[in-house]
Amino acid sequence: MRILGIDPGSQRTGVGIVDADAAGKARHVFHTALAVLDADSFPLRLKRIYDGLCAIIEEHRPEEAAIERVFMARNPDSALKLGQARGAAICAVVSRALEVHEYAPMEIKQAVVGGGGADKAQVQHMVSVLLGLQGPLQADAADALAVAIAHAHTRATVGRIGIPRTAWRRRR
Amino acid sequence: MRILGIDPGSQRTGVGIVDADAAGKARHVFHTALAVLDADSFPLRLKRIYDGLCAIIEEHRPEEAAIERVFMARNPDSALKLGQARGAAICAVVSRALEVHEYAPMEIKQAVVGGGGADKAQVQHMVSVLLGLQGPLQADAADALAVAIAHAHTRATVGRIGIPRTAWRRRR
Image (cartoon, rainbow over all chains, first blue to last red; front, side, top):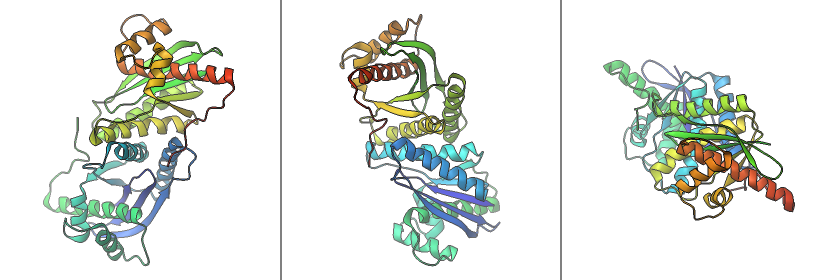
């Protein structure tokens, strides 16, 4: 099962792809950070995110997608910017008919580091270790790989204990 | 010049299209409110906005697009939701190679009612009057038509006084 992880942002969008086996073990396929700051306008940044993700999906053919749930953005202005980037990313994914699964930050840390209290640096370090990557890993790409690993882990766990997991909780 | 106005929202996205003459007078072409609440998940709501706008652009072939600038969202949670809807809408527009122009709420009121202090009901009423529409007009569709009218008005003014207007201020 090939999984696409996304960490959207209005400046950089992290993208990570892993192959997961039935036991939930993830193997690295691809990662990048789509930098969009040099686009000529904010709409064109969103287009870069959308087009960039569509091209990556086209090339690597992931079967499911995972994204971090946003619990509380810092302030309305940054929430709006993040939301726009997230909207562009999710549009790209659903336009390619991929299911999107959301994970809380705590679930991602639990899957990658084994504890919900880990800091960002620990998560990045463990992503490199788990996937056997050499050299420094860009932070947003690491977060994208982390959510993909969390999804790989959850799929395997859910498979073992037989609980159907809904793709995205219905919200009002 | 055919202008597409959009009023994005996570529950309903207003869409309005007008034809503008050189003097800035707008003629009604089309309006609707894309209701997305009944979509099965939040990502599918965004897909509805994206697909819905793409279909409308395909059918009516607007040449430019206008959207209301968000100054201050009420809170981070609603800003995130609005941002995602806005991201999906802007993606649809830029994927069809339309320029997106942003207008402050005050500029829209000024164009439609002639004063920046007008309330929402006044704006809706004046949109109907200016475009010669009969019967009640859905609120989000009215807001979308209002921003299209504001763009028609600004284009004509800018044309007369010869100031080039940039499509979207570059932001960091």
